[in-house]
Image (cartoon, rainbow, N blue to C red; front, side, top):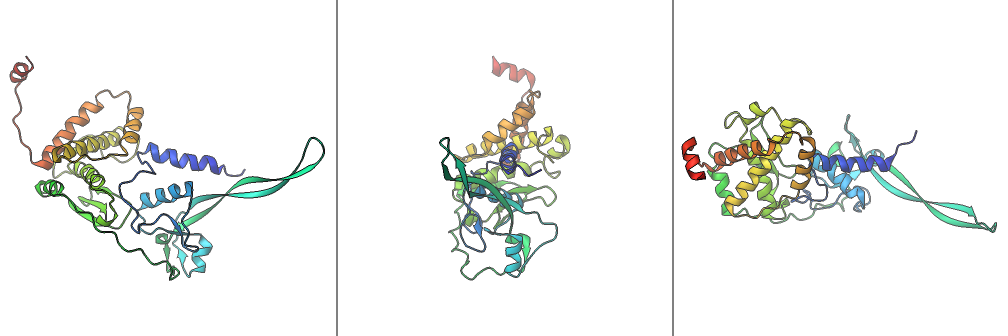
Length: 305
C-alpha cells in the first residue's frame, strides 16, 4: 500500500502544534540568515517544504540552511552519517492525460500528482564539499541586549550558565545547569529574545541547587504528561512576570498553542493554573532576589476586610 503523503505532512504539522511549536512563528532567524535551500541548485525550497525543513532544523539544532538527497551527498563527495533520518519534501508533478468528452472527442489535460523524496541537512553528513557559490551571507549585527534584561541576568544569584551559539534551538539543560540560546546575530527583536530568555531562566529555577521544583513535580520529560504541562506553564507565567518587571512588552507567539494543548490534556486538573502561578511567582522571586514576609491568617483576613 502506498504512503499517504498528504496525511503524513498534515500529521507532522499538527504534531508540532500540539507539542507547542508554531512552525511559522519564531523570534530568531536561521543561523545563516537563509531559508531552507537546495545544496545543489542554490534555490530556496517553497511551500510547505519551508516549514517541514525548518521544523527539523529547529528540533535538531541544525545551523546550516542547506539540504540534499542521499545521492546528491555522494556526488558532492560526502556521506550521510549512519543512523541519520531524512526529512520528507514534496512536489507536484504534472501528468498528461487524455480524456474522452461526451461527444466522443478526446482532449488533453494536466493532472497533478503529489510526489515526495527525502533530504538531509548537510550537518547530518560528513565531507560534503559545497559549490563555491554557496558562501555564507554576511553576519547580521548582534542584538543589543538592554540594561533591563542585563539587570535580570546579573541579579540572578548563582544562576545558570547562559550560552549563545549558532543554532535553531533554545533550551535549558538541568544536567548541565545551562541555558543555550541562538547567537545574538540571529535574533530579530529584543522582545523575542527577552521572552525566550525569561522562559528558560524560569525553567532553571527548578534545579536542585535552587527551588528543587523538578523533584516535586517530576521531570518534565514528554508532552502530554501532567509534569510537562505544569513545568511549561510555570515557565510561560514566569516569563510574563519577568517581562512585566522589566517593562518589556514581550511577544509570546507560542503561548496560545501551548495553553490550548495543556488545557485539553489536563482539563480535569482545575488546580493546575493556581499551582503553576504560585510556582512561577516563587521562580521569579528567586531570579529577581525578591524577599517578603508571609502574612499570618489573621493579617490576611484583616486585609480582605
